[in-house]
Length: 78
Image 1 (spheres, rainbow, N blue to C red):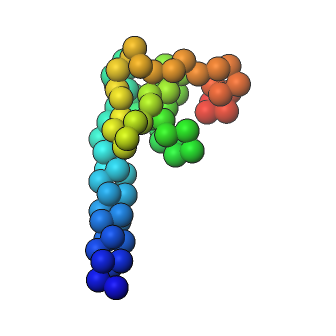
Image 2 (spheres, rainbow, N blue to C red):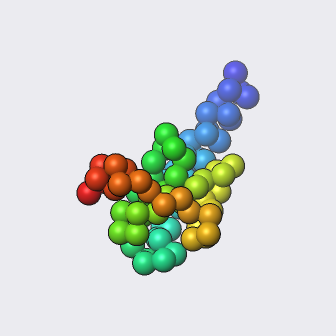
Image 3 (cartoon, rainbow, N blue to C red):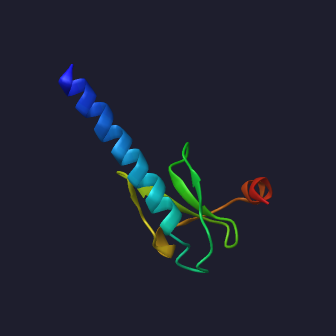
């Protein structure tokens, strides 16, 4: 029972840290705000239409690693 409680506590702490990190990070290209796409595990820059991957819970904030968003995706975030 104690192990389960500690596991839940660690998960909460990780979630809080993840949320704080996403609020602090900005687009390395334009310094604009990013939006978190949980399903795709990406941080989205609407201004530059770039999607930065999150790998193993670590945001990869390199332009070279970012995915250019499709026209359809751009329309969805506008």
